[in-house]
Every structure is written in structure tokens, then in C-alpha cells.
Length: 530
Image (tube, one colour):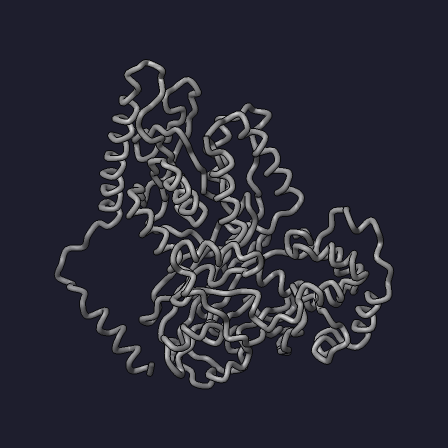
């Protein structure tokens, strides 16, 4: 699609606005709509509680009522499971949209993922679930374009293709020109020592981070120049904070079997082509949210937007033991599923626990921003940096990663047309404060994204090349599960054992990634089904 066509489309859209019409109070209308839905839910709940067995055995004839607090992927998945097992279900979502980190936005006439854009194919969890949603035939492979790495100091930028055999940046073959170009010859010699260094037996069981394993087996240069950029770009955190088992399931066992980190990576990679470890959906990952919402609505689930839960109470002697407070209303429920981030979840849960059982949320800074640019630049048709780029922390760039979405996803390239490109740049790291991200200044972030994209792609971009842009922000990102998160999860599960019908789901419990989130949400609801 040409720039003229894109501008015409944007112009046509803006011309439909009637400036003479009075401005609608969207916020009040949304609140009023939420209250009307809640009234219906509350009346239905009260009617259900009043309908008891006339034989006097105290058993309820009506279906049990479940309230799901949070309408992200975990909450929607839990709601679907509960509805399928005969519950009447109400979902309370604090914002105006469902899906959480799986979200979309419209930029320059294109509907684009503004959050998660792919899923890990390992284990088949997500693909199997998409089949259940009748989306299996829409699963999309990547273009197979490789990823690149950006290094640099001061103002010098160096771009290198990522080693084809790498996993999390860990090379499966250290003796390649690709690896040597990135870390240098002396560091390559050090990395090759992994192939002949005996594997300590204690590594079979002790707690290990990615950083510990890579530094010990291959050296600091591999960690700093290959692994850290990947982990920072993909997981927004430091490799020292991530367990090797959480990041790379099976790698520890493969190391014991092969006697080498490099050989273990090669074994797990099993000659998979570039991009084959992830997949997406034609039309974008957000179509999964649309499918879930449509199925829930058809099944009669009450989906209430703009409705944050403010309190949760428990009375084990009551006919419906849980009461959820929201918008001045009180909903009674037999089951409650918390599907919100750690801080709001613990604000609701801690009042139920004894003082010595109360839990703290992770205090690490986690403001992350995604700058999305739609660019008219035919020079990018050749994908000069493949499907995207990971950036070394030492490089003179604010962005930690760039995804060339139209080079990665054939369906999006077809939709956008020749010469038009979708670029996504990520900013911010968990545990670090970055003024550019935390200031909330979208214009400054877009300016920085254009500058960084120019350097990363090696193609000069200007404001007038940008057909449209937006910023998507995340304040509830979580790292892969480390020791502290595991301890908190164990303590929470112990606390919840005293509360029949109360479950907690979501990434802060399950870990990062759709596969973990979906599997944990389904398991949590199924395990505690009464």
C-alpha cells in the first residue's frame, strides 16, 4: 500500500468525525454500563441463593456461581473452563479491554499486535488450545528470517547475524565465523573449553541461573555479548536472575548426557530452522482474545469491563462463601479465581490471611514500553536485519530489541503491502528504572524509537517516513520464575489450602509465556473443581 493510499485511509477515517456533536462522556457511560451488568449478575446470584432444596438438605439446585477477577488470558481461560464444568461465571475486568498482555492497536489503518505477537511451540500447549478455539488452521509460521545482534560503544554500531545454532544466545557450535565475529578470537578459544571441561556432578541438582552456567562453561564474553542481549530482549531482565531450568527446560539434563553446554544446546535445537521455535496467528495473536470473548459471550458468561474488584471476603458458613466488592456492589460466589497481577491480587488476598502468612509483591521496577511504527520505506523490503534485532546493553541505544514485524510475519507483509513496514521497538528492563519509559512521554519515546531504528536497521528514517505510531505500556511484567518467586508461590499455595474454591492464576504464578499461563490456569481450576 502506498503512502498516498495510507494517508487517504487515515484521512477518510478522520473525516467521519462530526465536530458539531457534543462530546460524549465515555468514562461515565462505561461505568454506567458496568453497573447495569453488575445489577443483573447480583440479582441472578441472589435468586440462585434463594433457590434451595425443598427437602431441607441444604444443597443448592442452581448452578454454582464463579467470579473471575481479571480478564487477561489467564482469566478468560479459567472462565471458559469453569463454564464448561457447569458454573455460572462472571468476569470482572478493571480496564476497558480483555486480553491483558495480548492486545492490539490500529496504526495507519493496520490492526497490529500491541503486546505478545507469538507463542512458543514447544510442548504444543498453545497450539492445542488454539485448536479448541477453532483457530488451529490460522496458526502462522514465521518467515524464517534470522535474528541479528547489535553491539557497540560510544557512537559505533556493529551488526552481526545471530549464530544459527544458538539458544538464548548460547551457541551450539562455538567454532563458527558468526560467533568469532561477535566475541573475538580469544573469547572463542575460552568458549571452546566447554567441549573438554568435565561436567561437575553437583550441576545435576543445585540451583543455577543462566549466568552461572554460561560463565562457568563458556566464559564472561559469551555471557555479556551473546546471552545477555537475548535474555534482556526477550525476558526484560538479567540472566543472573533467571533459573536455567525455567528459561531452558531440558538443558540441564542434556548437559549431563552430553558433557557439554554447547553439545546440549545442539541436541535441543535438533537442527530446527530459524524461527521454527515460535509461531503466531494469521491476523495477529489478539484474534485469540476475540475468539475467547466470543465463545464466553455465546455461553452466557457475564463479561464486565471497567470493573475493578476492591475487596474479597470469605465466610465458610455462608451458602456462597465468597463476597466480591466492586463499584459499590457485592457479588456472592461459590468460587473465586484471581487472575490479576501480583500487587492487586495480594491486596485482595492478604486480608484473608493471618498476619504471619501475608505476602509481599515483588518490588522490582517493571515499566516496559513498546513503540510501534508503521513506516513507508521501500529500502526495508529486503529486511536488512532479518526478523529483528537484539541489542547489547553496552551499545549506544535506548532500545533493547527491535522486531521487523512485516519481515517476520508473511500475513502482515501481505496486508501492509510493498514498501510499508511495521517496526516494534522495546524499551525498559525489569528491575531497572529508565526515565524515558517511566516519564510517560509517548512523543519522546517515538522520537527515540525512530533514531534507534535508523541505527539498528542501517536505513535513515525521518518523521515524514512514519505513517503512524503508538506506544503500548506494561507495568505488570514478570521475570521467569526464580528462587524468590518459587518460594512465594509455595507460600501462597500453602495459604490457599485453607480456602476451598479460591484459586490464583496468571503469569506471576505460572511464569512467563502463553504456554505456562494457559496450562496453569486450566490446571488450577481443574485441580480445585469440587
